Image (spheres, rainbow, N blue to C red):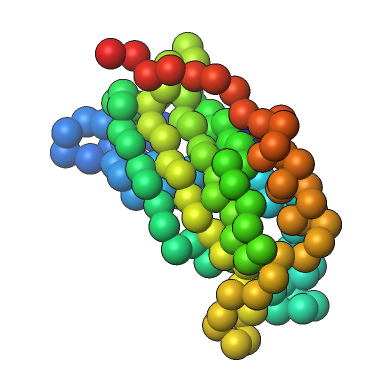
Length: 145
């Protein structure tokens, strides 16, 4: 599932001339929100029930530079669902579908007031487990050497 699209602006580039790490992470973070929305999470839940997400692990791999003016997108999938957490994979592609970066994120469902992990709501867990089993949001991509 495509979860984010963007363009690299000059202010997003570092001294090496490519998109800085902080902007990769921002794109992956925004992609994650679109993915959990597709699984049934809504921002209203944060407001009414004070429930949300906390990332506990990111495993990022940078494979190809993105430079100012490059168009890119993020394609996301569910890798694994637990009782309180999701593991998701996010792949950043340039406009030619070349793999630029990946991020595998483990996120726990979180009680924002108590500051602790809680059980995933059934509808989210069911959708995530189905997506993981079917790889319905996954797309095979291979990095270029």
